[in-house]
Image (tube, rainbow, N blue to C red):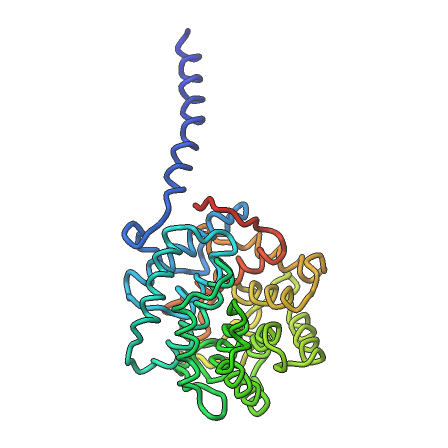
Length: 355
């Protein structure tokens, strides 16, 4: 064997072995102990050459675990979104098990914090949605959490929600009422038909009647709730949401969440009304699919095309904060909605193997 042939064989062997080593390392499940800090999200990060659900899930796991590890709390855009999304791919993973366990603990050991009502509603709703996506059975802790929600409901049907001027989830009471309705409607075991839930849902219907949503984003959230709970929205109202979402689709096939609301920034920078983003596109496609729009519809296919060509190298979809540019944590929820949208269109096959 001459020197040139030997070098060629060595090079070929290296090429064959390298992917095996990389795959093994990449497939090691993330945990609270092993997760590494992730870098800040920027609009400058390049897009991937090819779409990867493994990269998306890896990011979703890392973002949720990091939030819990660093802050030891749950947030609408991170851990809560994770638990409502991860099961569409796989839920028998260390990340899911650890975060589900921590949420159950929080439900059993409620905290007397300033935002305790918001936390109680989010905990109950997310546990219920997670139950529906995983075991299909209402966990005793979930039932207890849901029952607790009604003790905090106002007579007008609303809840004293966290208002930190951070859109879309921390700006008004309407968001909280919708989240509560979605969770109760999703809860397995006929929970919505229990006396306490029926009374609470009647108050929620009354709240919606007297407090119309302030923007398209919240109307779309209300549509999601109406697909689970009767008497929240008429078919005509749902169709109008569909039409309005179609009207906001951009020429590149995506949507921008900033165009769905009248969001106010805390800095003096203008909102970007022109660009599509992960939250806007994932959310729009997810809502449209829930409303019954076929996956093969041209608008849906264009949206899926945008998602599959705009995933960032780290696995996420960028969404600029509608609040301020120092932290773009909305990328977490935007990535979750992107995954939900792709799954709703048959672009992701559920499996137990995880990256």
